[in-house]
Image (cartoon, rainbow, N blue to C red; front, side):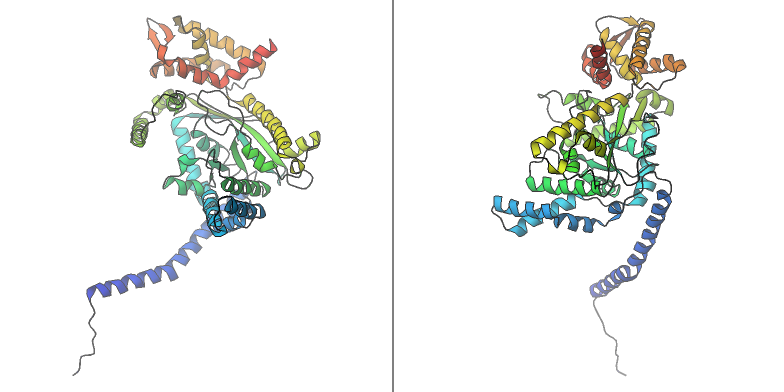
Length: 476
């Protein structure tokens, strides 16, 4: 009897099995998984939109590839591609490929499930793990009264990379924020998570005209679509603790084609942020010294891991005493439409020089609003007092008395101090203990004096509220 069996090598058999499994995954399991996940995402969107003050915009739910195509075929980007190709003597296709790469880099891939389930949970846990979080509103409930069609832009001071985490979870009950993040976040797998949270990457200080045009069009399109954004007007972290001058680029991207009569209103909400301890304070201060050598990547990773594990091992009470308060205040919204109508300005019709003059005027007004709501925290107060008496030893009672006098003066100026009167003594003691514990203040025989090598870091914390000294001087 003839044997009809066919013999094949083991390697070919295993290859056929693998190929069959891939086909099953591609044709059956993956479509079902995508359908299941999409249902979960849609369910989250329906749920959160019922409770958000500002709903998730359709633009945020657009697929990333569709956003990229929209950017690449935008008239101004097409024109920029043509000019770039001519200036660099290259084929138009090569310039277009560069623009596509820039668009892929910039465009987010927002996922509501990751934002409101994973991202919110992480931000909330990390924020409350490190700090005693406080939030205040100084807008007479006007935040709730912003018209639904408005494009809301939270404009903030920038003290720490914790700002992203802190503000995200504090406004998660109101809206989904879209951030501009720098190159620091472009590491795997962090960049995937950040893009899923709706953030978009920005190359700081890039002089590439094509890149800047693609970025400008993305910011402009998202603003016109009503996406709620968060912008650090200073453009980067403050290194000496003082409020920096505003950078005008992002506001120009938002406003250069703005028509107050027909476009949706752009409403700027000032946000003030402050910390009793900025996690990266020593690194920021070190960058003030141009002669300081750059730390290696391994040193940064090693230091960060040591800090992380040391924090985890600390008891809750000790951790609170070490990191203290983190506070966020929301101020009174300002309308771009009202500014245009009051000043008879049409940004879309102005030449660049005139446009930037008005944008700078608006930005300076917003920075002034931000300064008014930056929280006055205990460590900043004690740092101010200690710098006044830096050449003398003082008792705890003397320092607290000076701090209370300073609090009274700040309250007369209208500074935001959200500390109950009965808690002042306890809170100031905690701030003083924190400064002693970190080695910034010497303690001897019941007396205190700033450590000579810590004057710069005390100035860093005192500078967070230094604008009130200037206001007091102007009044006086």
